[in-house]
Image (cartoon, rainbow, N blue to C red; front, side, top):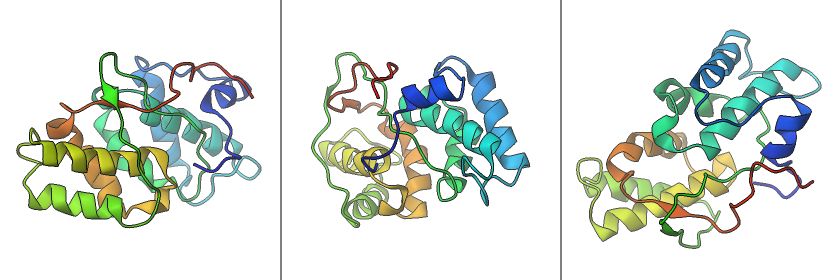
Length: 184
C-alpha cells in the first residue's frame, strides 16, 4: 500500500467503527451496503462518505482477520470495490507460533505466476508440499501487501479459494504487533 495511506486503526476512530474479527454481522451489513448503493462506481470520502466508511469496515476486517472468520460473500465480493474505494493500511493479524513471512516484491508477475503454478501443481487439492507453501506465500504477499492491481483479478479471487487447502500454512509479517492502536 502507498505510504500516504492512513492506518485502519486511525480510520476506525475517525469513522466510528471497531475492528472486531468476531463481529460478522457488522462485516455483512457493510458488504450489503456496498452492494446495494453502487459503491463499486463511486466510493470516495468526499462524494460517497457512507460507501467509503462501509468499505473501510469490510476492507479492514478482510485484511486483518484470519481467513476462516471472514464470510465467503466478503471473500468473493470484496475486490469488486477496491478500484473505486481507497484502502486503509493493516496487515493480517499475527498467528501465534507461525513463521515469519518471506520477503516479497510488488513487481507485477510473481503473484500471477505463483497462482498459475499453484493450480498447475494441484495445490488446490493438496497444499502440503513445500513448493505449494512457497507459491502460496508469494501470492499471499502480493495480495496482502501490494496495490490491488499488482495481481490479476483471477489471482485476487483465486487466493480465497486457496485459503482452505493452503490455510495450513501461516506466516506473520514484520511489525504487526499493535495494529489496532492508532499512532498517526
